[in-house]
Image 1 (tube, rainbow, N blue to C red):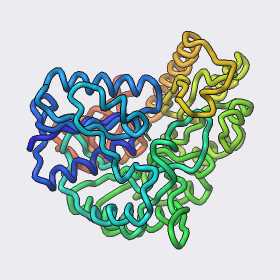
Image 2: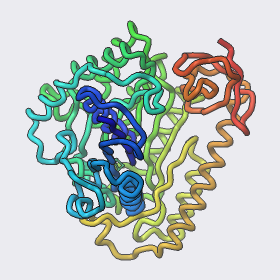
Image 3: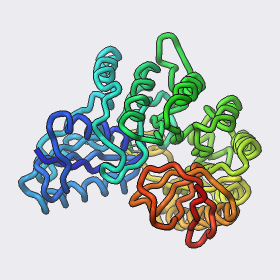
Image 4: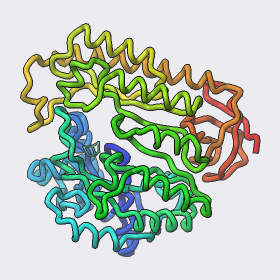
Length: 415
Ligand code: F3S
């Protein structure tokens, strides 16, 4: 059976796509292009209306180019709107993945997860992937006003530590040298476990485990309130963790943060970002910003822009507000017109790109740890710079690179 997996959305969804692919390989499947596959899995996202649209377009495209294919649709959009998805051409099944089903009882999740532990038929380079996205947590118990994810992913569930350690050993055996630790609410890892645990315990255990393995870790998104000083210190002090944090701010106006039900203030975020910068002067600091949340005034937007200018962030994702059915924000008044949302999003994106450019410029002349990716002529530094390097290296090699140019980003291999 020839299969293809198309995945949209966040890194946790990519991790789910890897799990699906692992099972297909274990069932004898062979990877193929969507145009020639017998089975095409479309793993969807529903974070915005645009994400829904992208999933529908992909499904229709596969059905048009490969009418004989079975199209299986999974992921958050399939969880939210199974009937709508089921009506699209060529779609045969919309399974509720055990990993994402909100009502899935704990013991059954544990059995499914245990069955997967440590088995990694995928290799670095398969489907263009050099680092492996490993999901250690899914679901969310927070109730941010704009967010659809708790209804698609259910309550927070953590992968127990022994299983994560088994995964990491399996990934190292399979040749992976970098693992992205992903979760829908990564910072809540351990709160549902018996005995209760915490993300710091997981990171600490991974740090010790990796001492005997040729593997490093990168954290995916971490909510600001979960980024404790102890976590920053651990990352700063361990060569096994990339100096890279992604902390979604969403908004720098406290009035908007309160309306969003985000449990921190802009000043608290500034303190956390400043501490990261102090402890890790060259760290990449990513953030998510929302444009056009209901009630966002011109003044709020100015505060947002000004904060972005001042914060030590290096990578910015901008989300234009999109009303998700059933969320608190979808029922709020004071909606911002679409054209104004897009204008604000564009201004934030332009400034975000400028911040990234300045970060690259600041790194010129520095000697950085990196992993070669793609065909070996590109390296991703631990602090998240993607630079061209001279040919001669293979994919998935740990190197040190000196950044020689910011635009276009380039470097020379030191060793
Ligand atoms: Fe999208 Fe679901 Fe991730 S809505 S952003 S795929 S948790």
